[in-house]
Length: 175
Image 1 (cartoon, rainbow, N blue to C red):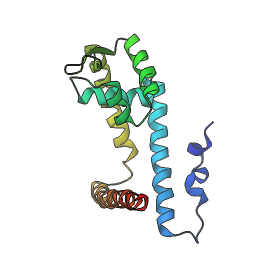
Image 2: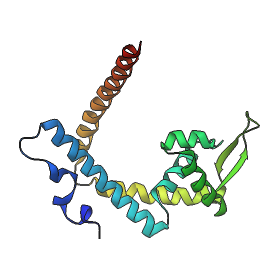
Image 3: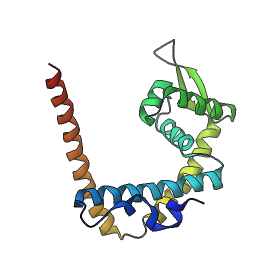
Image 4: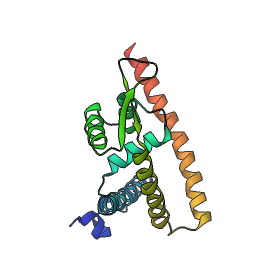
């Protein structure tokens, strides 16, 4: 039993007290919502498709790149180690969902590509996945979704500038 999903009061947001800053409350609410959505998706992928979210994510990256991606590119896009990518790719290759092909411009590398079976299976999963996400966000009407989307776009832009500023500041401190 996963209490974080069974009882709303036991998620990350339960740490909030009235005295906490609004930004901290918002951060924990966003994190709690993200964790819940991800948990539902993980559970449904496991029960309905006998797969995992990392496998689904790897297939999604390959679906966007018909020419394939190197192991390094997959690792970078999925923000996991090369070892994780190798393990998942080995499993998917054994199941006939992906293949390794010689890289068109680097003879030392391989491009991982979806097989026709992999493409069909991913597209079935992706269509169902989309419906799950629609269901999970059905608590907001279209206007609310648009408002939150726009607000988060502004936050994302701000965060990119904060991250860039921090990197520049650290660079100057080293010199």
